[in-house]
Each structure stands twice: as C-alpha cells, then as structure tokens.
Amino acid sequence: MSLLAVSNLTRRYNRGGETVAAVHDVSFAIDPGETLALAGPSGSGKSTIARLVLRLIEPDAGRIEFEGNDFLALAGSALRAHRARLQMVFQDPLAAFNPRATVARVLDDPLRIHGIASRTERPHRIAELLERVGLPVDLASRAIHEISGGQRQRIAIARAIATKPSLIVLDEAVSALDVSVRGQILELLLDLQRKQRIAYLFISHDLGVIRAVAHRIVLLDAGRIAESGNARAVIDSPQSAIGKALVAAAPRLDRTMQDAS
Image (tube, rainbow, N blue to C red; front, side, top):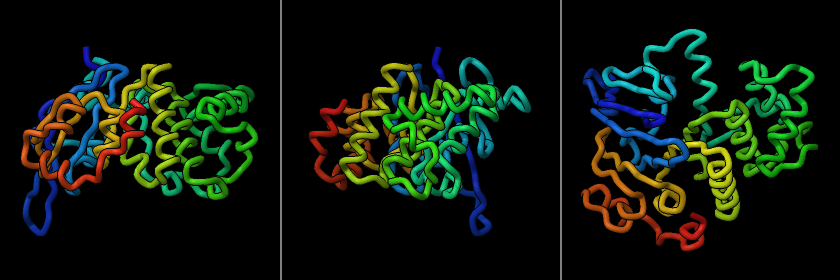
C-alpha cells in the first residue's frame, strides 16, 4: 500500500472574475522511503499541490489517502496526530521561523506541541536532533538570525524529523543555498532517508538536483500532469512538450550532484 495516494486532485481560484484551475485532476502516489519530485514552470501548480497535501488549503475535488487513512476526512485530534507524521521544509527557513527565537526554542516546539517528550527530556532530545543533522550541540543557545543559511536549513530539517514523520514535503528547500551547501543538505536528506525510511515529496525547478535525489518525477503544466515516470529516464529523454522545454532551458546537469545519488 502506498504511503500517500493523491487521486483526481483539483483546486480552483477566482482571478479577475474568472475561475482558474491551479490544479486539475492530478493523481500520484508515494511509497515509504521513496522520493517523488514535482517539477514544472512557475504557476504550474507545484506549491498548490504541496499545500493541498499538507491540508493548508482544501481541494475542490479529489481524494488524499495518507498512511491508509482518508486524510481529508480527519479533524481535531485525529488530524493533529497525523500531521506529526507529515512535515514540511520551506525554501526560506528564516521566514518560517521567528528569527529571534533560539535554536533550542525552535526544536522544543514540535516536541512540546505533539507531546513527544517531557520538559526534562526535551533538552536531551534537542541535542540528539542537532547531532543527527550534523550540528554542534552548543548551537542550541544561538538565535536563528545569528546562524548561517545552511545551518538554518539543517535546523528546519531537524524540526521536521523531530516528530518522526513518514513523509516530508520539501518545497524548493535547497534552491536558496549556494552550490557547496546545497550538496551537503542533499547528502543529509539522503542519509536520513536511508536510515529512517522517510519519503520525500520534493518540489524543485532544478532538474539536476531532481535527477540526483528523486526516484520518480511528475512534470506539471498549467496544473495538469504532462508526464511522469522514472526521474532519470524522464529528464534524460522527455516525451512531453513541457518536459523538452524544461530540459532545454536547464543549465548543464552537474555531474557531482548526479553522483550524489
């Protein structure tokens, strides 16, 4: 059984008095420990799908099953419990965090909110999370705005894995980082996936990164699926018009990033 199964998902918006389908009849599935990439030009529906999967917005039609449950039917405590298993890492962690909060406070929040550890246990859990993402324990006392972008993204990943999720949505999570830091974060994600069997819904415009880390890919165009399949096969030989255009417009694929997979 798939970890996440999205069926016939549709979301419409009213723009200038007209109804526009930001996402139309989209279906895909993700298995445990798998990375599925969503790619497409701006406005193709990638981030809307992420928000729908996380139930930050509700669909107009379609079905979302998560860990065998009708995710759209959940409410109250049942929804909160399942949200602990479904986390997100954003493009800009500085915008996602209170920049003046300490690293310890950022990591304490999910442990406290989801009742994962007692007050006396949480400092030890926070230290474990920092070590797991390759950061020194003494970073806990630092404010978010005082640390580097790469460190902030590691903190974002630490916060995401604090609740022991089965799926993490990564929305352009490495696009704001420089190349060397990007490679380190991708290696961290791959290592966590190998050790904890976490699945990723990986949203990116960078086909080189997708080719390096994703098992499968879904190419979107104007809210619809244009093409899907094995990530490397689709990127190396796209069949759809949008796939060919994206590959033609992409910089030369980085061999180092390809080898990271």
